[in-house]
Amino acid sequence: MKTAALLAALAALFMVVGGAIGGEAGLVMAFVIAVVTNGIAYWFSDRIVLRMHNAQEVNSDHVLSRVTRRLADKANLPMPRVYLIASGSPNAFATGRDPDHAAVAATQGLIEMLSEAELEGVIAHELTHVQNRDTLISTVAATLAAAIMFLVQMARFGMIFGGGSRDDNRGANPIALIATIILAPIAAMLIQATISRSREFAADRGGAAMAGSPMGLAAALQKIDAGAHQIPLETSPATAHLFIVSPFWGGIGNLFSTHPPTAARVQALMDLRGRA
Image (cartoon, rainbow, N blue to C red; front, side, top):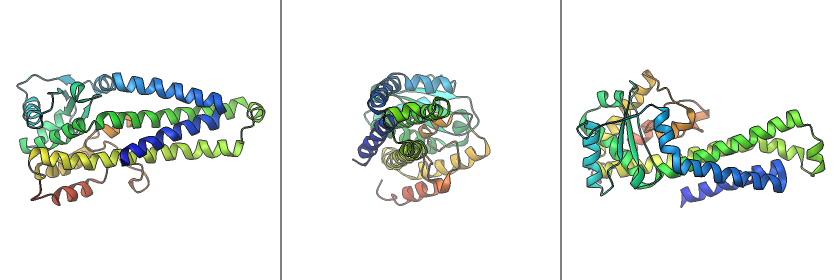
């Protein structure tokens, strides 16, 4: 319910921005952009992100495939496609619009760094994302946030190069427009980050239950966090929400981070001991 409310807030913000920029025409433009961008995200986001990272599908004998098969069978999930990314930075993600069209990808660095029990915890976390359809929810949230940024950028260019006469003719409030341009991107990033963080905690809990213990995932998170700091992953900020640990750091007190602090996630997993 919380995630649904946040997605609704993000969609409402998108329409408000469109209306503030162009009145009724802006609302129509915002609606069209939302339909197109979310359609692309729904049908093609998995292929786009896998291609971005030059992910290569592995065969059934690979340890990544064996662990994924074991956990997918245990959770009664369709076997997802399994991919390997040739990067020394340890990380992993799941993508796809639903469990029947899902993919799990992990880096070579992750495979080399983790024990099989720890790898099992990571894959269980990613399969929980698939099971909960977080892969679609997070993609829609990220796409709406990016579309809001696009509309705001258009408004900035319009104010700089288009002058104020057309705004005055349609009765737009320039102060409200400036406030929208400043505040809308901040609100969009906050909402997207809140959605992503809540889904990460839920996937940690579900992953611990699927693996049968929180210990493997807890140990893996600590190793991944340390390794990702040492060996940065070459990726786009637009895909940061997908990974089990964010490949980027920064923000005001982690306010805009797409992931909860690793220490908080590990502590939450430790609190599950005896209940997983």
